[in-house]
Length: 113
Image 1 (tube, helix red, strand yellow):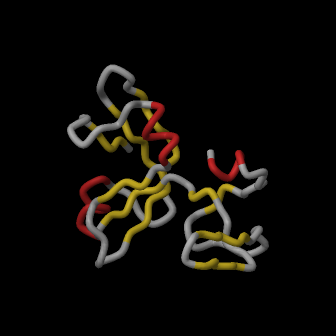
Image 2: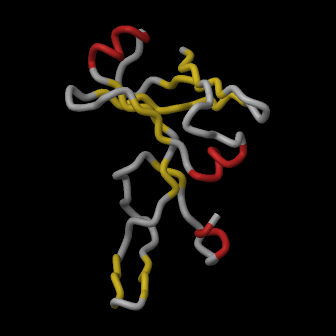
């Protein structure tokens, strides 16, 4: 939402994939920070340990869904699977997606294959 409001045309990418992306400068009361590239909208994704990946029957690059409960419940599709021994099971979605379903700390969620 912020990028759109600021007039950025940002690509949807896996986090860390910033090649050929726009840059920006952030300015605040304590100075500024400038980056030549790296402004993206990160693809929704799920971090899994190898054990979690085995449990769900997925591997790096597969996609999963996330069924979100509550009064504004919905199902998000195409969560990119990222697997690494240092990862704990964690889903990363953007703020707009969380707001759309009124996601709260106690909202029920279910990963689906």
